[in-house]
Image (tube, rainbow, N blue to C red; front, top):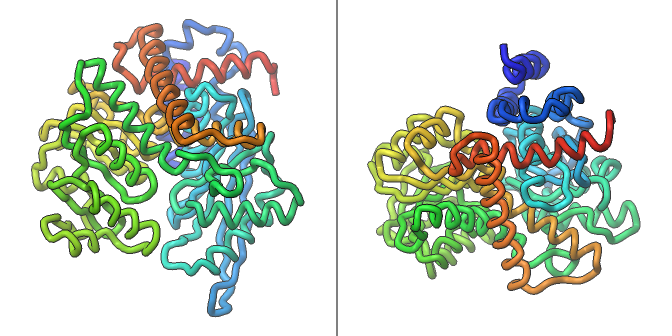
Length: 453
């Protein structure tokens, strides 16, 4: 058995009830095989085994009271995974599916994603199995305040800086930041994704979506192509999806889809102009369901209880570029086969680990430009890092400045993925291997320098 396969087997034995975490570890570690021979010092210091073990795993009770006076209890998590290159950094996810394994997979991925940004940020993640959908503002406030009453003990601007993720937007960040200030009696940059009036950064809400499109544009440019005129399929309807669609439109592409847990809409005229504005209002203000889009625009087709990828497969919709932006493991092997069959040659992941391993194999076997999440969606955490910098310096940059910095970071991530892939014996457009290796080597060298800690 190879060194890496032995490590993976040990990790599986220790974490047998955490499939998402095991999947993430396996995907990263198998691609790191070439680093074992090139860096015997990493083996000697047992860097590989140390990096798959979190620094600490925090689980806590979150009691809260709903509007009817009924007491509920949820579970809160914070995984502080690795701070070799900077304070722990990673979002908070509020969703019924949240469990320890999911938070660990997200935190593990965050190590390498943050490393790729070139900014000094370690990897962490957190959240709760609380579902904000259908809750009143007061219920969300009571829950987030209870959540922060425990979380505040473990975070700080130079220790651990959470952000938003699925189910945690500006409302939730505002409530948590307000309560943190009340508890510790200081105004510091302990959370990112804040409102502009109290320390937030311009472009932060847009950053993950914009970044995934910038990364796709960089990949396409290696084949002398651009997004202009491309038919783009996008999953989800949250923050990442909304701004992925906007940037696709700005670069001349046509985004034709959006989805939520109820179903999918396909609009062959493109989700742009007043249609994009309707989607923004529907999801951010009215918190409605995606089927209302089809009711507003009858030419759009609604597919009940179907994912975007189900619809592409079953309806044979032509696709040039795909932007999975909903959740983990949303694209199966069959979905990937259908994407390739229907003409897709570029996949840029806005969600975290949205493609199962078999789907990734299909992309690589068919010469699809594949931007893995830790590279393609790093724009969000990169701009969170820029927010941290602005908070530390007590200043704010203009929208144009932040967008230019984001665009430059995505270009550098793209270049570092290609360079690492080539250096370690892969084809330059194997971004999956390149992203893993480039992210890992920087963190591994920092861990080596720090000694056995």
